[in-house]
Amino acid sequence: MILEISYIFHLTRLKFLCDIKTGDKDTINRDPNGKYPFYVRSPNIERINSYSFDGEAILMAGDGVGAGKVFHYVNGKFDYHQRVYNLHNFRNIYPKYLYYYISSLFSIEIEKGSAKSTVDSVRLPMLENFLICFPDIDEQKNIVDYLDNKISKIDNIINEVNGNINLLEEYKDSLIYQVVTGKIDIRGEVI
Image (cartoon, rainbow, N blue to C red):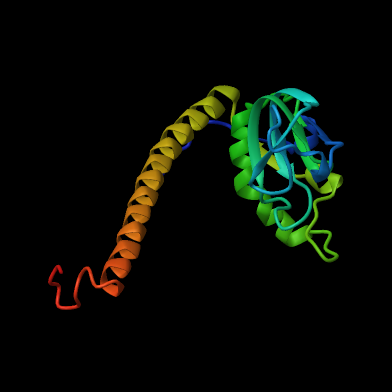
């Protein structure tokens, strides 16, 4: 199968497409009953009672095991950890296209150029100078629509499979319980 691409790509560094800054909160600031999402350096989203940003953003863990591998696309009020990068104020790029692009390709960059000590980390110059290849804005939107549609279908299948796995786990536990308590004998006869 040959894929024909009929649009022109642009190539530039990330620093020319958005502003980048880090948060000013630490994990001790979280509140499990907080009003706003609090993005830390893991895939798990905590809660907090403050927000320092309101708008469209891409968040990326800057250090720890999730460095350059944990991404969130957010649109609304939130707060974020001091080692989480916030990409915002987008220019000449559709934000969700950038989210898909960077979340799928930046991990390769961190593997080849990480500032390692005891944990992985992403330094601001590495992020700012990351090369982004992108088509015109209309094609970016088409790509995002396509990916959103396909990912939604995949997520629905994953949820269905996970539901089936949970049912099978419950069945397994029930079977073990019933056999060891004598409610079912090992020859398959119900007592």
